[in-house]
Amino acid sequence: MSTPRRYQFDNQLPVPRNPDQQLVYRPEPLGAPAPFEQPPMVVQHIHQAPPDRTVQRVALGAGAGGGAVAAGVYFGPLLVGSLTAIAANLALLAFIAAVGTWGVVTVVRSVGGPDGKAAAENLGKARRKRR
Image 1: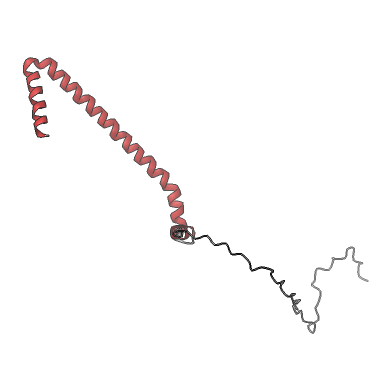
Image 2: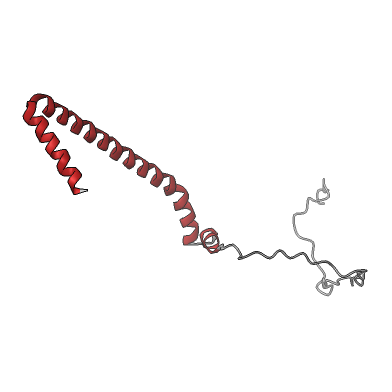
């Protein structure tokens, strides 16, 4: 004698299906569409030119485009930061060169006496004549 089932779903085997009984989908027919009292109003916005979304479509698509977006997101701020650092370094070097030149000119004028002042004046006149 077999043991009684404790629960309704104790048997894990699938229920055998009758092969003669086929599952067929029979759609219900839809009703006729309701007639419009007025023709529908079409709102169409006309612009000068449609926006060019080619880059976005390529970038957000599969393959290399997705990598282009990731590279732009990652390397864009790095590029801006590096260019800013280079510009700051060049500005600092230009400032140091200007201060050094001013210092040398001041020392030559003070130490050189009348000959140094005359040489500085001659240089100034020569520069003005070139312009």
